[in-house]
Length: 490
Image: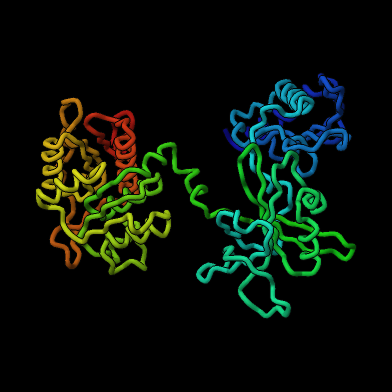
Protein backbone atom coordinates (compact mmCIF):
# COMPACT_ATOMS: atom_id res chain seq x y z
CA UNK A 1 0.00 0.00 0.00
CA UNK A 2 1.31 3.46 -0.91
CA UNK A 3 0.39 6.83 0.63
CA UNK A 4 -2.32 7.57 -1.93
CA UNK A 5 -3.96 4.21 -1.31
CA UNK A 6 -3.78 4.69 2.47
CA UNK A 7 -5.39 8.15 2.22
CA UNK A 8 -8.15 6.71 0.02
CA UNK A 9 -8.75 3.96 2.59
CA UNK A 10 -9.09 6.54 5.38
CA UNK A 11 -11.50 8.64 3.27
CA UNK A 12 -13.59 5.56 2.63
CA UNK A 13 -13.89 4.80 6.36
CA UNK A 14 -14.96 8.40 7.10
CA UNK A 15 -17.55 8.53 4.31
CA UNK A 16 -18.88 5.05 5.07
CA UNK A 17 -19.24 5.96 8.76
CA UNK A 18 -21.08 9.21 8.01
CA UNK A 19 -23.46 7.54 5.56
CA UNK A 20 -24.33 4.91 8.16
CA UNK A 21 -25.12 7.63 10.72
CA UNK A 22 -27.45 9.37 8.29
CA UNK A 23 -29.28 6.09 7.71
CA UNK A 24 -29.64 5.82 11.52
CA UNK A 25 -31.41 9.20 11.70
CA UNK A 26 -28.50 11.57 12.23
CA UNK A 27 -27.95 14.75 10.20
CA UNK A 28 -24.72 16.51 9.37
CA UNK A 29 -23.86 19.31 11.79
CA UNK A 30 -20.35 20.03 10.52
CA UNK A 31 -17.73 18.79 8.05
CA UNK A 32 -17.03 15.68 10.13
CA UNK A 33 -19.83 15.69 12.72
CA UNK A 34 -23.43 14.51 12.92
CA UNK A 35 -26.30 15.30 15.30
CA UNK A 36 -28.84 12.68 16.21
CA UNK A 37 -30.79 10.85 18.92
CA UNK A 38 -29.87 7.89 21.10
CA UNK A 39 -32.85 6.01 22.54
CA UNK A 40 -32.44 4.36 25.94
CA UNK A 41 -34.54 3.22 28.88
CA UNK A 42 -34.16 6.62 30.56
CA UNK A 43 -35.53 8.46 27.53
CA UNK A 44 -33.90 10.02 24.51
CA UNK A 45 -30.59 11.91 24.41
CA UNK A 46 -29.33 13.98 21.49
CA UNK A 47 -25.60 13.72 20.85
CA UNK A 48 -23.07 15.04 18.37
CA UNK A 49 -20.72 12.42 16.96
CA UNK A 50 -17.46 13.83 15.61
CA UNK A 51 -14.68 12.15 13.67
CA UNK A 52 -11.36 13.55 14.86
CA UNK A 53 -8.26 13.75 12.69
CA UNK A 54 -7.14 10.48 14.32
CA UNK A 55 -10.08 8.48 12.95
CA UNK A 56 -10.14 5.55 12.14
CA UNK A 57 -7.22 4.93 14.52
CA UNK A 58 -9.12 6.54 17.42
CA UNK A 59 -12.86 6.29 18.17
CA UNK A 60 -15.26 9.16 17.37
CA UNK A 61 -16.08 11.76 20.00
CA UNK A 62 -19.60 11.70 21.40
CA UNK A 63 -20.81 14.95 22.98
CA UNK A 64 -24.22 15.30 24.69
CA UNK A 65 -26.14 18.32 23.37
CA UNK A 66 -27.53 19.00 26.84
CA UNK A 67 -24.47 18.54 29.05
CA UNK A 68 -26.39 19.00 32.30
CA UNK A 69 -28.99 16.35 31.47
CA UNK A 70 -26.44 13.63 32.22
CA UNK A 71 -24.97 13.03 35.65
CA UNK A 72 -21.22 13.50 35.83
CA UNK A 73 -19.38 10.25 36.39
CA UNK A 74 -16.07 8.52 35.82
CA UNK A 75 -17.42 7.72 32.36
CA UNK A 76 -17.29 11.29 31.08
CA UNK A 77 -14.29 13.24 29.94
CA UNK A 78 -13.22 16.56 31.38
CA UNK A 79 -14.93 18.42 28.49
CA UNK A 80 -18.20 16.51 28.98
CA UNK A 81 -17.76 13.96 26.19
CA UNK A 82 -18.75 10.37 26.84
CA UNK A 83 -15.84 8.12 27.85
CA UNK A 84 -16.68 5.16 25.65
CA UNK A 85 -13.57 3.12 25.01
CA UNK A 86 -11.12 2.00 27.72
CA UNK A 87 -7.42 1.99 26.95
CA UNK A 88 -7.41 -1.81 27.00
CA UNK A 89 -10.28 -2.01 24.48
CA UNK A 90 -8.58 -0.21 21.59
CA UNK A 91 -7.94 -3.23 19.41
CA UNK A 92 -9.15 -4.12 15.92
CA UNK A 93 -10.58 -0.59 15.38
CA UNK A 94 -14.05 -2.00 15.98
CA UNK A 95 -15.58 1.50 16.09
CA UNK A 96 -15.23 2.00 12.32
CA UNK A 97 -18.50 0.04 12.06
CA UNK A 98 -21.05 2.80 12.72
CA UNK A 99 -23.82 0.36 13.63
CA UNK A 100 -21.60 -1.35 16.23
CA UNK A 101 -20.50 2.03 17.53
CA UNK A 102 -24.07 3.29 17.95
CA UNK A 103 -24.95 0.08 19.79
CA UNK A 104 -22.02 0.75 22.10
CA UNK A 105 -23.20 4.34 22.71
CA UNK A 106 -26.65 2.99 23.53
CA UNK A 107 -25.15 0.60 26.09
CA UNK A 108 -23.30 3.55 27.65
CA UNK A 109 -26.63 5.32 28.28
CA UNK A 110 -28.21 2.14 29.64
CA UNK A 111 -25.30 1.71 32.07
CA UNK A 112 -25.60 5.36 33.08
CA UNK A 113 -29.34 4.98 33.70
CA UNK A 114 -28.61 1.97 35.92
CA UNK A 115 -25.93 3.81 37.90
CA UNK A 116 -22.90 1.94 36.52
CA UNK A 117 -23.47 -1.22 38.54
CA UNK A 118 -20.29 -3.29 38.87
CA UNK A 119 -18.14 -0.49 37.52
CA UNK A 120 -14.42 -1.18 37.68
CA UNK A 121 -12.49 1.33 39.86
CA UNK A 122 -10.19 3.04 37.36
CA UNK A 123 -7.96 5.36 39.40
CA UNK A 124 -7.60 8.17 36.86
CA UNK A 125 -8.72 11.34 38.62
CA UNK A 126 -5.74 13.06 36.98
CA UNK A 127 -7.49 13.30 33.61
CA UNK A 128 -10.13 15.66 34.99
CA UNK A 129 -7.60 18.46 35.51
CA UNK A 130 -5.44 20.34 33.05
CA UNK A 131 -1.69 19.76 33.31
CA UNK A 132 0.36 22.54 34.86
CA UNK A 133 2.22 24.57 32.24
CA UNK A 134 4.71 26.04 34.70
CA UNK A 135 5.62 23.30 37.19
CA UNK A 136 7.41 20.37 35.58
CA UNK A 137 8.51 18.65 38.77
CA UNK A 138 7.71 15.02 39.50
CA UNK A 139 6.29 14.91 43.04
CA UNK A 140 7.14 11.69 44.87
CA UNK A 141 5.47 10.67 48.10
CA UNK A 142 5.55 7.69 50.54
CA UNK A 143 2.59 6.17 52.38
CA UNK A 144 0.35 9.14 53.23
CA UNK A 145 -1.38 8.09 56.48
CA UNK A 146 1.05 10.01 58.67
CA UNK A 147 0.63 13.22 56.65
CA UNK A 148 -3.15 13.48 56.25
CA UNK A 149 -4.50 16.89 57.25
CA UNK A 150 -1.03 18.38 57.70
CA UNK A 151 1.16 20.92 55.92
CA UNK A 152 4.16 19.25 54.30
CA UNK A 153 7.46 20.05 52.64
CA UNK A 154 8.72 18.78 49.31
CA UNK A 155 12.46 18.97 48.75
CA UNK A 156 14.14 19.08 45.37
CA UNK A 157 16.41 16.12 44.79
CA UNK A 158 20.07 17.11 44.96
CA UNK A 159 21.02 14.92 42.00
CA UNK A 160 17.85 15.35 39.96
CA UNK A 161 16.23 18.78 40.46
CA UNK A 162 13.24 17.69 38.41
CA UNK A 163 12.19 15.44 41.31
CA UNK A 164 10.51 16.87 44.43
CA UNK A 165 10.20 14.43 47.33
CA UNK A 166 7.84 14.69 50.28
CA UNK A 167 10.33 14.78 53.15
CA UNK A 168 8.18 15.67 56.15
CA UNK A 169 5.64 17.94 57.76
CA UNK A 170 6.21 21.64 58.12
CA UNK A 171 4.82 25.04 57.24
CA UNK A 172 6.34 27.89 55.32
CA UNK A 173 8.25 30.24 57.68
CA UNK A 174 6.52 33.61 58.41
CA UNK A 175 9.32 35.38 56.54
CA UNK A 176 10.09 32.99 53.80
CA UNK A 177 13.72 32.85 52.83
CA UNK A 178 14.94 31.21 49.67
CA UNK A 179 15.24 27.49 50.31
CA UNK A 180 14.92 24.15 48.54
CA UNK A 181 11.44 23.42 49.80
CA UNK A 182 8.09 23.52 48.07
CA UNK A 183 5.27 23.78 50.58
CA UNK A 184 2.00 21.91 50.36
CA UNK A 185 -0.60 19.95 52.27
CA UNK A 186 -2.04 16.45 52.25
CA UNK A 187 -5.78 15.80 52.50
CA UNK A 188 -8.20 12.89 52.06
CA UNK A 189 -11.09 13.06 49.60
CA UNK A 190 -12.42 9.72 50.81
CA UNK A 191 -14.54 7.54 48.51
CA UNK A 192 -15.09 9.53 45.31
CA UNK A 193 -18.32 8.58 43.56
CA UNK A 194 -18.05 11.25 40.89
CA UNK A 195 -14.79 12.96 39.91
CA UNK A 196 -14.42 16.61 40.96
CA UNK A 197 -13.19 18.97 38.25
CA UNK A 198 -12.36 22.21 40.09
CA UNK A 199 -11.43 23.49 43.53
CA UNK A 200 -15.00 24.29 44.61
CA UNK A 201 -16.00 20.65 44.04
CA UNK A 202 -12.87 19.43 45.82
CA UNK A 203 -13.56 21.68 48.79
CA UNK A 204 -17.00 20.18 49.34
CA UNK A 205 -15.46 16.68 49.59
CA UNK A 206 -12.85 17.63 52.20
CA UNK A 207 -13.37 17.81 55.94
CA UNK A 208 -10.62 20.43 56.09
CA UNK A 209 -11.45 22.14 52.78
CA UNK A 210 -11.89 25.59 54.35
CA UNK A 211 -8.51 25.37 56.08
CA UNK A 212 -6.76 24.42 52.84
CA UNK A 213 -8.52 27.28 51.06
CA UNK A 214 -7.20 29.75 53.66
CA UNK A 215 -3.66 28.39 53.30
CA UNK A 216 -3.82 28.70 49.51
CA UNK A 217 -5.21 32.23 49.66
CA UNK A 218 -2.50 33.23 52.16
CA UNK A 219 0.23 31.82 49.90
CA UNK A 220 1.32 29.32 52.57
CA UNK A 221 1.02 26.32 50.24
CA UNK A 222 1.16 25.88 46.47
CA UNK A 223 0.73 22.11 46.21
CA UNK A 224 -2.18 19.98 47.42
CA UNK A 225 -1.74 16.21 47.54
CA UNK A 226 -5.16 14.54 47.63
CA UNK A 227 -5.69 10.90 48.53
CA UNK A 228 -8.88 9.26 47.27
CA UNK A 229 -10.41 5.81 47.07
CA UNK A 230 -12.74 3.75 44.90
CA UNK A 231 -13.97 0.38 46.16
CA UNK A 232 -11.07 0.05 48.63
CA UNK A 233 -8.47 0.95 45.99
CA UNK A 234 -6.37 3.98 46.94
CA UNK A 235 -4.56 6.57 44.85
CA UNK A 236 -3.47 10.20 45.10
CA UNK A 237 -3.29 13.22 42.86
CA UNK A 238 -1.05 16.28 43.22
CA UNK A 239 -2.45 19.67 42.24
CA UNK A 240 -0.86 23.05 41.88
CA UNK A 241 -3.15 25.67 43.47
CA UNK A 242 -3.19 29.45 43.50
CA UNK A 243 -5.79 32.18 44.26
CA UNK A 244 -7.32 34.46 41.64
CA UNK A 245 -8.17 38.16 41.96
CA UNK A 246 -11.84 37.29 41.79
CA UNK A 247 -11.61 35.17 44.93
CA UNK A 248 -11.51 31.75 43.33
CA UNK A 249 -8.78 29.12 43.31
CA UNK A 250 -7.26 27.62 40.18
CA UNK A 251 -5.87 24.10 40.23
CA UNK A 252 -3.69 22.32 37.71
CA UNK A 253 -2.51 18.71 37.65
CA UNK A 254 1.07 17.94 38.62
CA UNK A 255 2.97 14.79 37.78
CA UNK A 256 3.15 12.65 40.90
CA UNK A 257 3.79 9.08 41.98
CA UNK A 258 4.03 6.95 45.09
CA UNK A 259 7.33 5.48 46.23
CA UNK A 260 5.67 2.86 48.46
CA UNK A 261 6.61 -0.79 48.28
CA UNK A 262 3.06 -1.67 47.33
CA UNK A 263 3.29 0.56 44.27
CA UNK A 264 6.55 -1.06 43.22
CA UNK A 265 5.01 -4.51 43.63
CA UNK A 266 2.06 -3.87 41.34
CA UNK A 267 4.07 -4.70 38.21
CA UNK A 268 6.22 -7.46 39.69
CA UNK A 269 3.99 -10.32 38.57
CA UNK A 270 1.69 -12.84 40.23
CA UNK A 271 4.60 -14.77 41.78
CA UNK A 272 5.84 -11.78 43.78
CA UNK A 273 4.52 -12.84 47.18
CA UNK A 274 5.94 -16.35 46.87
CA UNK A 275 9.33 -15.07 45.70
CA UNK A 276 9.57 -12.83 48.77
CA UNK A 277 10.03 -16.02 50.80
CA UNK A 278 12.67 -17.61 48.55
CA UNK A 279 16.46 -17.46 48.73
CA UNK A 280 18.65 -17.58 45.64
CA UNK A 281 22.39 -18.08 45.24
CA UNK A 282 23.94 -16.86 41.99
CA UNK A 283 27.44 -18.00 41.13
CA UNK A 284 29.07 -15.60 38.69
CA UNK A 285 28.06 -11.93 38.63
CA UNK A 286 29.41 -11.04 35.24
CA UNK A 287 27.15 -9.75 32.48
CA UNK A 288 24.75 -12.70 32.56
CA UNK A 289 24.65 -13.01 36.34
CA UNK A 290 24.08 -9.27 36.82
CA UNK A 291 21.05 -9.24 34.53
CA UNK A 292 19.74 -12.41 36.12
CA UNK A 293 19.94 -10.89 39.61
CA UNK A 294 18.28 -7.76 38.25
CA UNK A 295 15.33 -9.71 36.81
CA UNK A 296 14.81 -11.80 39.95
CA UNK A 297 14.86 -8.73 42.19
CA UNK A 298 12.27 -7.05 39.97
CA UNK A 299 10.12 -10.18 40.24
CA UNK A 300 10.21 -10.16 44.05
CA UNK A 301 13.26 -12.04 45.34
CA UNK A 302 14.81 -10.22 48.32
CA UNK A 303 17.26 -12.82 49.69
CA UNK A 304 20.38 -13.29 47.60
CA UNK A 305 23.81 -14.81 47.94
CA UNK A 306 26.08 -13.38 45.24
CA UNK A 307 29.41 -15.08 44.52
CA UNK A 308 32.17 -13.68 42.29
CA UNK A 309 35.76 -12.54 42.85
CA UNK A 310 36.18 -10.15 39.90
CA UNK A 311 36.18 -6.35 39.79
CA UNK A 312 34.04 -4.13 37.58
CA UNK A 313 36.25 -2.65 34.87
CA UNK A 314 35.28 -0.09 32.20
CA UNK A 315 35.06 -2.73 29.49
CA UNK A 316 32.45 -4.64 31.51
CA UNK A 317 29.94 -1.78 31.37
CA UNK A 318 28.85 -2.58 27.82
CA UNK A 319 27.18 -5.82 28.92
CA UNK A 320 26.86 -5.45 32.72
CA UNK A 321 24.18 -3.72 34.80
CA UNK A 322 26.91 -1.78 36.62
CA UNK A 323 27.48 1.87 35.73
CA UNK A 324 30.52 4.14 35.64
CA UNK A 325 30.20 4.88 39.35
CA UNK A 326 30.70 1.17 40.17
CA UNK A 327 33.98 0.81 38.28
CA UNK A 328 36.58 -0.53 40.72
CA UNK A 329 34.06 -2.27 42.94
CA UNK A 330 33.82 -6.02 43.15
CA UNK A 331 31.04 -7.21 40.88
CA UNK A 332 29.09 -8.66 43.79
CA UNK A 333 29.18 -5.29 45.57
CA UNK A 334 28.14 -3.44 42.42
CA UNK A 335 25.15 -5.72 41.94
CA UNK A 336 24.27 -5.54 45.64
CA UNK A 337 24.27 -1.73 45.48
CA UNK A 338 22.00 -1.77 42.44
CA UNK A 339 19.50 -4.19 43.97
CA UNK A 340 19.33 -2.20 47.19
CA UNK A 341 19.05 1.21 45.53
CA UNK A 342 16.73 0.48 42.64
CA UNK A 343 14.54 -2.38 43.82
CA UNK A 344 14.31 -1.75 47.56
CA UNK A 345 15.93 -5.10 48.34
CA UNK A 346 17.09 -4.93 51.99
CA UNK A 347 20.89 -4.74 52.01
CA UNK A 348 21.06 -7.12 54.97
CA UNK A 349 19.31 -9.73 52.83
CA UNK A 350 22.12 -9.75 50.25
CA UNK A 351 25.22 -11.79 51.08
CA UNK A 352 27.91 -10.55 48.68
CA UNK A 353 30.86 -12.95 48.71
CA UNK A 354 34.15 -12.07 47.05
CA UNK A 355 35.24 -15.62 46.37
CA UNK A 356 35.15 -18.50 43.91
CA UNK A 357 32.59 -21.27 44.37
CA UNK A 358 34.99 -23.91 43.13
CA UNK A 359 35.04 -26.53 45.87
CA UNK A 360 32.68 -29.31 46.83
CA UNK A 361 32.01 -28.10 50.36
CA UNK A 362 30.94 -24.62 49.21
CA UNK A 363 28.64 -25.99 46.53
CA UNK A 364 27.01 -28.43 48.93
CA UNK A 365 26.36 -25.77 51.58
CA UNK A 366 24.86 -23.43 48.95
CA UNK A 367 22.45 -26.15 47.87
CA UNK A 368 21.49 -26.94 51.46
CA UNK A 369 20.93 -23.32 52.50
CA UNK A 370 19.10 -21.90 49.47
CA UNK A 371 15.85 -22.59 47.67
CA UNK A 372 17.67 -22.34 44.35
CA UNK A 373 21.28 -22.15 43.20
CA UNK A 374 22.06 -20.84 39.72
CA UNK A 375 25.42 -21.03 38.00
CA UNK A 376 25.98 -18.09 35.66
CA UNK A 377 29.77 -18.30 35.70
CA UNK A 378 30.21 -20.29 32.45
CA UNK A 379 32.49 -22.65 34.41
CA UNK A 380 31.74 -26.23 33.36
CA UNK A 381 33.29 -27.71 36.50
CA UNK A 382 30.96 -25.63 38.70
CA UNK A 383 27.98 -26.95 36.75
CA UNK A 384 29.26 -30.49 37.12
CA UNK A 385 29.69 -30.10 40.89
CA UNK A 386 26.21 -28.58 41.13
CA UNK A 387 24.66 -31.43 39.20
CA UNK A 388 26.33 -34.19 41.18
CA UNK A 389 25.69 -32.64 44.59
CA UNK A 390 22.10 -31.59 43.76
CA UNK A 391 21.37 -35.16 42.71
CA UNK A 392 22.92 -36.52 45.91
CA UNK A 393 20.82 -34.11 48.01
CA UNK A 394 17.60 -34.73 46.06
CA UNK A 395 17.24 -31.12 44.85
CA UNK A 396 17.61 -29.27 41.56
CA UNK A 397 19.80 -26.35 40.47
CA UNK A 398 20.02 -24.31 37.26
CA UNK A 399 22.88 -23.26 35.04
CA UNK A 400 22.71 -20.64 32.29
CA UNK A 401 25.37 -20.05 29.67
CA UNK A 402 25.87 -18.26 26.36
CA UNK A 403 27.73 -20.11 23.63
CA UNK A 404 28.91 -19.56 20.07
CA UNK A 405 29.73 -15.89 20.72
CA UNK A 406 26.19 -15.17 21.88
CA UNK A 407 24.40 -17.01 19.09
CA UNK A 408 23.18 -19.71 21.47
CA UNK A 409 21.95 -19.72 25.04
CA UNK A 410 20.99 -22.65 27.20
CA UNK A 411 19.40 -23.09 30.60
CA UNK A 412 19.97 -26.54 32.11
CA UNK A 413 18.12 -28.16 35.01
CA UNK A 414 20.69 -29.94 37.19
CA UNK A 415 19.97 -32.82 37.36
CA UNK A 416 17.10 -33.11 34.85
CA UNK A 417 13.73 -33.91 36.38
CA UNK A 418 11.79 -37.13 35.94
CA UNK A 419 14.87 -39.02 34.71
CA UNK A 420 14.75 -37.33 31.28
CA UNK A 421 17.93 -36.95 29.24
CA UNK A 422 19.98 -33.76 29.50
CA UNK A 423 19.78 -31.23 26.66
CA UNK A 424 22.03 -32.11 23.72
CA UNK A 425 25.34 -30.32 23.32
CA UNK A 426 25.03 -26.95 21.59
CA UNK A 427 28.61 -25.74 21.17
CA UNK A 428 29.14 -25.49 17.40
CA UNK A 429 32.91 -25.38 17.59
CA UNK A 430 33.00 -22.55 15.05
CA UNK A 431 36.27 -20.59 14.73
CA UNK A 432 36.04 -17.10 16.19
CA UNK A 433 38.45 -14.18 16.04
CA UNK A 434 40.72 -14.05 19.09
CA UNK A 435 40.27 -10.67 20.81
CA UNK A 436 42.34 -9.97 23.92
CA UNK A 437 42.27 -7.29 26.61
CA UNK A 438 45.04 -6.38 29.01
CA UNK A 439 44.79 -8.42 32.20
CA UNK A 440 42.62 -11.16 30.64
CA UNK A 441 44.10 -14.65 30.44
CA UNK A 442 41.62 -15.78 27.76
CA UNK A 443 40.01 -14.15 24.69
CA UNK A 444 37.24 -11.63 25.26
CA UNK A 445 33.84 -12.99 24.26
CA UNK A 446 32.20 -11.17 21.35
CA UNK A 447 28.70 -11.89 22.71
CA UNK A 448 26.47 -8.85 21.96
CA UNK A 449 24.53 -7.20 24.83
CA UNK A 450 21.05 -8.21 23.53
CA UNK A 451 22.02 -11.88 23.77
CA UNK A 452 22.98 -11.38 27.42
CA UNK A 453 19.63 -9.80 28.25
CA UNK A 454 17.71 -12.53 26.39
CA UNK A 455 19.57 -15.38 28.07
CA UNK A 456 19.16 -13.78 31.52
CA UNK A 457 15.43 -13.33 30.92
CA UNK A 458 15.07 -17.00 30.00
CA UNK A 459 17.01 -18.08 33.07
CA UNK A 460 14.86 -15.82 35.26
CA UNK A 461 11.67 -17.36 33.86
CA UNK A 462 12.93 -20.84 34.66
CA UNK A 463 14.06 -19.74 38.11
CA UNK A 464 10.72 -18.15 38.98
CA UNK A 465 8.83 -21.18 37.72
CA UNK A 466 11.08 -23.51 39.72
CA UNK A 467 10.67 -21.54 42.95
CA UNK A 468 6.89 -21.38 42.57
CA UNK A 469 6.57 -25.12 42.06
CA UNK A 470 5.73 -25.08 38.35
CA UNK A 471 8.99 -25.76 36.48
CA UNK A 472 8.87 -24.95 32.77
CA UNK A 473 10.86 -27.95 31.62
CA UNK A 474 12.31 -31.17 32.96
CA UNK A 475 15.69 -30.61 31.31
CA UNK A 476 15.82 -26.90 30.50
CA UNK A 477 15.87 -24.84 27.34
CA UNK A 478 18.27 -24.08 24.53
CA UNK A 479 17.83 -21.56 21.76
CA UNK A 480 19.77 -20.64 18.65
CA UNK A 481 19.39 -16.87 18.48
CA UNK A 482 20.61 -16.62 14.88
CA UNK A 483 18.09 -19.12 13.51
CA UNK A 484 14.81 -18.05 11.96
CA UNK A 485 11.54 -19.89 12.62
CA UNK A 486 11.89 -21.93 9.43
CA UNK A 487 15.38 -23.05 10.38
CA UNK A 488 17.42 -20.67 8.21
CA UNK A 489 20.14 -18.38 9.50
CA UNK A 490 19.20 -14.82 10.47
